[in-house]
Amino acid sequence: MKKFDSEIANALNAAKRLGLGGITPAVISRGAHLILHLYPYPIVARVSTDAAAQDSSSAYRIADRELAIARYLDGEGVPVLKPAGIVPAGPYDAGGAWLTLWEFVPQAERMRPSPEEAFKAITRLTEAIRTFSGTLPILGVWNRAASSADRLSKQSDGRISRLLDQFHRLDEEMRSGARALQPCHGDAHAGNLLAGPDGWLWTDFEDASFMPPYWDMASYAANLALFGGYREPVFAFMHNYASGRGELEDFCFAMKARVLLSTIGNLDYALQDRGDRQFAMRQLELAEDFITGLKVS
Image 1: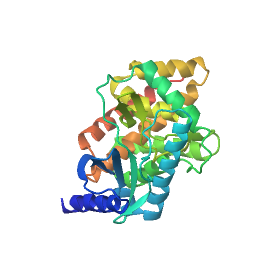
Image 2: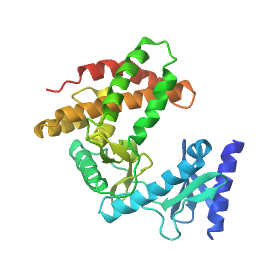
Image 3: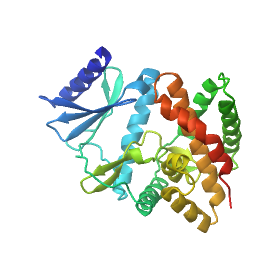
């Protein structure tokens, strides 16, 4: 609790230096990031606490790049959560962590996007971010999963060992240059779509990087299909789209890779008591059969 209170105090001090006083902070979420509404201002502070503790200079670059990507996509007409406009958006030092400022958008009650709506939102995002000219890491989000795979190699569970074997095969193929890589959001799952009053907004661009084709579609559909099966409507819609374009192999490769990334990453975090163990174990139970049954046909 003391650490949490300190993080909030550091964020408020950073805001005060910008002339934003009299704030009543409202915590929106706290995980790898502390997300605060700086009431009464229409501003949300995002504090990259975990990343800063690991590598401050890298955390700064990621935060700065995230703002640049959001501005670019907004300029391209993609609905995104925008960086704050009434004060410069940062990044700012907040007690050793990096803070960025974003527009506050009241969340609306919306039905989950239909398969077609989800497809259109991802396609629009993918087409726009592909032309982003800023520097992006190669396989950025995948590299983090590779670190998780290294830690999990010490586990004796045969299911984990078999998934790691598949991970390493795909990892070798990705790094061989045999597959084209393109700019992607990196983590375009439904949790990174914010339901605003005027529609859905993409958020959280910290994992943007060069990834294989269909990565963002796979990021959205992977867990839906893992838990819902191959007939899950969003997965089926995207599968049919890729099949119609003669690109089913690319789609299935991205799906396998994304399921592996999600399962391995979540399991690694859960075993460190930093994640949802029940969810991670359920992924582990399902992942091997799902990947094996994913056919290019």
